[in-house]
Amino acid sequence: MKRTQISLYWKCQLIGWTTASLYWAFVAFTSGEFHWGLGFAQLITDVILYVGITHLYKIFAENNKWQLLPLNGLIIRIFIAVPVMGIIYTCTTIPKVYFLRTMFVNNGRLDWDQFALINISGIFMAGIRLMAIWLLAYHLYHYAKREIALAGENARLQLGFKQAQLDNLSSQLNPHFLFNSLNTVKALIYTRPDGAARGIDLLSEILRNSLYRGNAMMVPLDEEIELVKDYLELESMRMDERLSFDFQIKVPAMSVKIPRFSLQLLVENAVKHGIAKRVAGGKLIITVFEHEGFLKIEVLNPGRLEQDNANVGIGLENLRNRLDIAYKGAATFNIIEQKENVLATLTIPFK
Image (cartoon, rainbow, N blue to C red; front, top):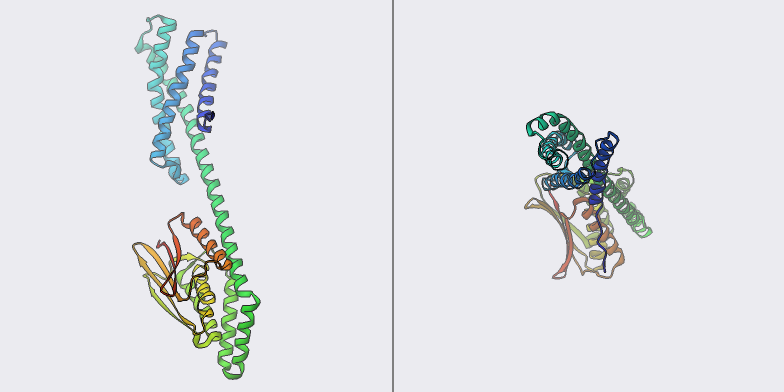
């Protein structure tokens, strides 16, 4: 038989208000005005009443998503909520105490007006103190919990970025890539000296972008496109007429931020695992446009989708993880095969 677990919230509620009620009973006991029946009734009604009041506040705060507010906005609402909760505490406590004292001590002879007038200020101040403590404890717990979760997400995002940066460096610096690029430059020295110089410039620019652009996880779209153009120009110098490419950019703002190396990863996969494996080569088409508030990036290349390629799978899985962490499910990525072409589509919120 499965044992029912009491949540931390309910444990804190029950323990906290029980402790407060026991403290009040102890004060009454040491003052010589303690009544066992009244004390027990006060304990039960205190826990039920004040747990109910604070739990209703919890439901209200959750429905209005106060736990997601920034600290400044939350503090303002707490300052408003404390006196309101103090008034509610007073309006419920005075009748409760009056009724219990009438029942156990005064036998119906207690004057309501006099009792309320004497006790209202003290009960109100006690309510302000208690509700302020409860509200601060409740919201500080959720604020700390949110900050810890945010720090964890940032750490995961930073780790994903570092992995992407390492994957990019591995791709750019692997011996095969350097060997082909340097051979391209070497061949051009004798036939096209201007082309050799351009090849060296492109290679150095790609490596500089990988090594010296800092740790920015998001980059402007135009910066990512310039990196991709450098890469494609260098690859086209090596593959000659086997590689051609076309950019179709249809966005209102080139400064929109996208995950760093995301477009480059799609283009590298298209070239290395698609066009480079075809004798006739092919044309790579990169399309960027806005659709219903989302930025869509499409990379189309001739070829077949390699389901069993481990390198492609690792790189794309890394991209999916980074998108999931950065956009919390609002961004999508998919790659499909259609009519002897492979289409990779990246969709992210435009703002």
